[in-house]
Image: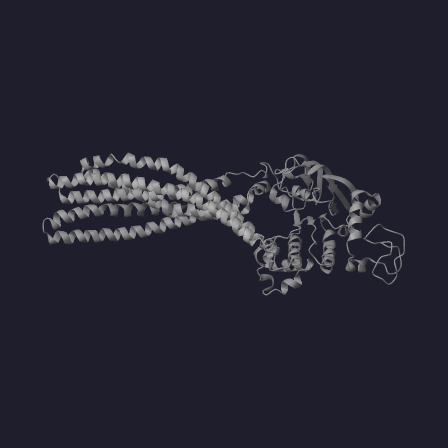
Length: 609
């Protein structure tokens, strides 16, 4: 991750070496001051020594400032690249991965874990490397100053290094556990905040607060273990290092008294010994941060090492832009990875011709949404093949395949962006005129223009500033602006009032003449004009045909129609358009077609219907 920033890395290392060298010069200057100035009573030597100290201090200040700048910028760049790389990789992963991992936990890896890595790269590694350089430099100069005393001091080095090797791995494991608990807490908070209306409606505030407090308690327990281990680690290192140095200095002081060593040499030795001990102490402090970041990087590496199960084949080709909007399923069997023992589709086969409108109906869990997800290749089939535009989907690049579809989901998903940008999700390069036209077709133009800033109005997280029906119209406009050859409608008008639904249905009728349309419908009144209706039950297609034929045939579709049309209130707006006031045969949507006469002058169909 540092390789692209060789300039920053080189600048950091150069100024690190310069600042460390300046620091190591200070004990030698102190020795000169004592031996040539104080001991000899030479004022000129004192002046020269302090001038040297001032110059060294200036070099140290400049080098430290530049070192801080280069290493901090390096940390920021590496952290930014890591976050971008991690987020881009997450976007490549398939639906199965997100079934197994909560979004809040993944978000903690992008934020909290990446922040730890930034702290290490931008600070801790610099301090650690500086401590290593200072320790090596001080140890070398200790030997040059007094080999015999340095030999005594070296006896304590193995005792100081051993705890680093032993405790380092333990701190890393404890840090990983602490980050896992923190990620779980983030996931829980994200989930609760995203469902705040439900929590308040069911008065769950106190319960959720207690759940979150329990999660925080687990984080604190893990953090306490990690901090306790680091504290014990630091105690042992400092006790060993300073204990051995104190012993050596005691020997040195007795040598000065006996005349075997000058006071200047002992002072120089003491300063280098203190510098070496301080470096070891700083290294132990920083080593805990390095191990903590290593645990965070383990979690990040897990994601970066995860490869999507759904990806472009080595020889994948792009679907031609002018490919026909056809879809074909041939004996498709599929079960979700999270539920392998519960088949979602069993031997499904059908074909949708270009320009055809096909509806998928059936009870919940029949496999309707699964068909959409397989068409978009969110999952791969277990057996059987799916073709789009005459090409097997596995032979196509994911981007070109999904560009052939425009989706209107049942649950509209809006982003914390402007209304125009939310519509441009369908086609990023669309002009404002394109956006306005799509909004007009989706019956969204009037309410968007009435917003405080019109198309530039921010819609808030998940579109909270709009009603459910307005959100759905934005989603429809997003699909219309895409101008894809295949339009997928998953109960696209379920959140609209009767007047808006009628207008949207008219707009969709105009679009259907130009594209292939596949509709998931729970309200059968919305699919009566479909060219074909596929009735699914238990992952199988149990019936196929037009609305009238399926009613006459009886079976599941007729039963669904009976349940809906007998127990739902009449849609006055629809009936006003559909009822025949001239007294011709009734064509009621509510039940079976009859041959009785509708009552003239009324919006209702005949009494029988």
